[in-house]
Structure formats: C-alpha cells, structure tokens
Length: 117
Image (cartoon, rainbow, N blue to C red; front, side, top):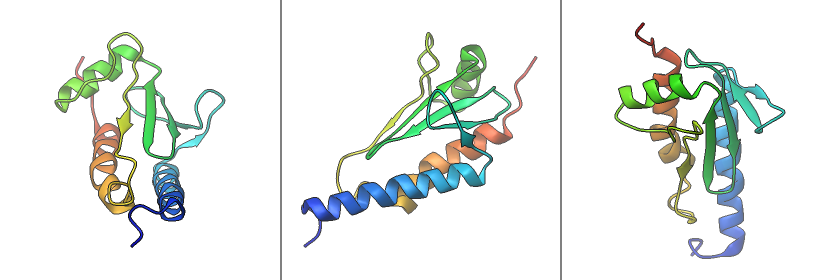
C-alpha cells in the first residue's frame, strides 16, 4: 500500500507542486523575486509559493486582498495580506484534482473579481 511509504509521499509532494504550479502558470503566473510566482489579478499581484503540502500566498495590496477574500466568505491576514492553504501531509490529501477543485476555484473567482468602488 502506498499511503504511508515515504517514496509515495515524496511522489505525492512532487505531483502536488507540479500540478499547482502548472495551473497557476496557465492562469498567467510568472516567476517572482519575492515568492516563487506572481499572479496578476484585479486585487493586485498575488505572490505564491508552492510547498510540499501547502500553498502560501500573499496579496501585495492588502486592502484589495481583504475586500476580495471577504467577498467570497474567506479571509486573508488583515495586516499582511497572507492567504495560505495548508493540506494534510498524506497521499490522499494531496491529490492534484482534489486540491485544484477547491484552490483552483478560488483563483478563478479572484481572476474574475470586480471590486466595488
């Protein structure tokens, strides 16, 4: 069984990082000097680093980030603009299709978001 093997977990980490990174690049993310990637959005740049079992993000424009995340019933850190996603460190939790169904949906909402004046 592959659920507890360190080799299987390492493969899951790699597949998670690759799938999330490829998805973000398909949405216009580019390499960044601060985090690994930067995604231009209507809420300003979103800086993103993909770790083995987490996606760390931060809005450059904290106020716009707060407006967006509040509009979807989520929240970013109101002082730093950090909006992070942590997953269980297991093969089952790191399935790219499952992660991208949720995280990808949030990114799609962010890219389509129109802030109110």
